[in-house]
Length: 372
Image (tube, rainbow, N blue to C red):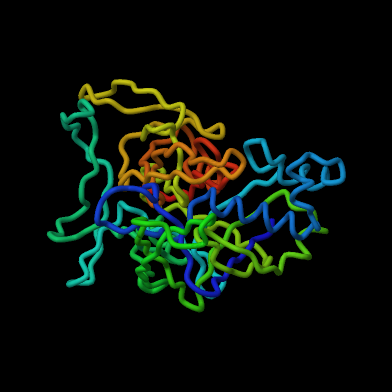
């Protein structure tokens, strides 16, 4: 598999789910890294350009463009052809960064970490009587590492139960730049009355790139991937280069491991719910509710989860010239605590790196596996 690395020439803007015409004084925030659909569209564009596509003939269904359609799919069809993506994700110095698992809490003043794991006593709450995450030790003031990222080595340390050596924060990758714009009236060749808007762009630092791993590319295509393209909102310029994809790290099992920790490396679509796809509830000891199911042939019992704030993602449908319906996603960094029917280490090898949920070809729902 090859990895495409996108480098910004100036600022980039990947809009949040709110529409441009949303009423209110808050500017439209940009996102970094971008949404899966934004990068999937860029990948299709890069592949088409590398194959010398005639985009108008491609949209019209011309036979001469069939080779392009065989790879990236037809213009009027859902999906991205035979391509299969992993990502998108930020990179620094060509090294992939992973979201900090949200069960890891940090108190900066004391430079200490503490983690959450399933409690031993079921607690009655709005979900019923369930096992809730509890702290392994008291650390008042500790907070989850939201919007923070780890290198592969630090991710392995955290998923094995240790502490990270360093954490990459958002300000280490980009700075926010507020912009003021005005809509144009093409017919009058003038500014439209009363249509001011505010956006917040991301100015990416020089050593930071956007990465996506692409499977399904013919060798003849990957050799012609150094291009300049428009990426994201407002058509900002970026370059793209094909590099070798790094392997997803595998965590070794600690001696006292009780179960598996499934962490989302990328946001996942579970059809608006939070439970792992296909899992059903059952009652166990203490009249507690757990959820059981199977992923990639591995039988699991879900005891509890630590989830981030639901992420709303919309987008623009270029073919139908209209907005896509916004969906709610489980954010990257969310973790699921599971017990395994069988050998832990074998189960971890089976599950590490697979994708779950909906639209996995876009890169959604990639798993990294650790232990608790």
